[in-house]
Amino acid sequence: MKFIKNNTRIQEQDDAALIARYKISGDLEVLGQLYNKYMHLVFGVCLNYLKDEEQSKDAVMQIFEELVGKLKVHEVQNFKSWLHVLSRNHCLMAIRKNSKNTTVSLEDTFVENTEFVHLDMDDTKETKLTVMERCMETLSEEQRLSVDLFYLQEKCYKEVADITGYEMVKVKSYIQNGKRNLKICIEKNSSE
Image 1 (cartoon, rainbow, N blue to C red):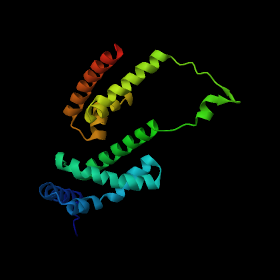
Image 2: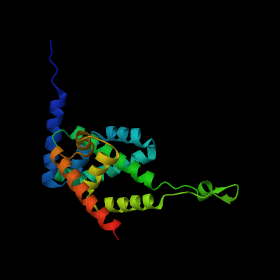
Image 3: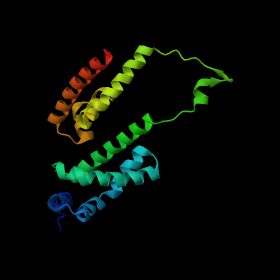
Image 4: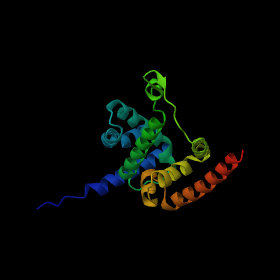
């Protein structure tokens, strides 16, 4: 009778060794060897979120480029799980960016039977939203992402930590400091 070894433990050790080699040498071939093992999974995550094969292929390459810097800074215990979160986060940010840049035909929006449709908009509400958007952009990337996920997307601390890959303590700090900085910026810009 043969016993089957737990390949997951061996795989994690191999990944850890490759990460350590990459951190020391900065050799992109080492990083490529590590990433190549999971590239099909990254593509699957991207395709699941982006729903477009070409965008997903681009995202796979962009995620590799992100890894070049992020892997040197982050302490990664389980590369496969961490990479999954990084990939998901990348896709969510891409979707968010694309939704901000969505263009709508002016003709479809404002013209009906060749007459202009007047839109009743609350100017103060629109102004407040504009100020808030501008102030969100002044936050650090970590604060902006954490605040967005926690308040606007209504994620809990654990979900924010899972999505971003940040430690729970850091997430709470980013949210607290981001909220304070956002409040200061909004108050400053509202009085002007």
